[in-house]
Amino acid sequence: MEIDEFNKLSKEEQLKVKYKNLPKRIRVIQFVMTVVIVIVLITCVGNFVSSDESSTDGVDTTFLYVRSETMAKKFVKETLISPSSAKFINEDFNIWLFPDSTVVVKLSVDAQNAFGVFLRDRYYLKMKWRNDFAQQENWMLINIQNNQ
Image (cartoon, rainbow, N blue to C red; front, side):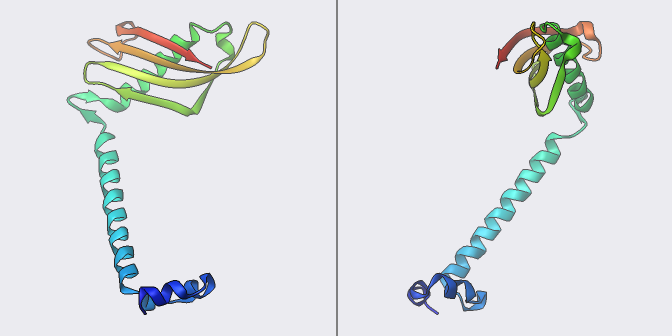
């Protein structure tokens, strides 16, 4: 079947055409697209696996992520009117690590305002750690931004 013949078919008839009867150009395009998608998926999975290693340059990145989250929540709670009411939203949480010991964290929190009403705020924090990031006193808040 040629492409012109295929295009003359109705949508229902086109759907009924078996793969082996499709025009050669369509089969080639489908094959090439499948190969491209597989390559992209393999590349993405490879990048994800390599970026999620538990140790890079002697730094335990898994523990660094946990410590970054803990410190970000601590710094945010210090700005809240009712820190004990804070409920952090896991779905809206991201951490970016930088080679100069800088960490940027995005998080959202539901907390009570001065009137006792729960509001959701989104925070962006830029923090830096020196020496041993496991120690709280080694963390410094550089910038905190509240976007509602």
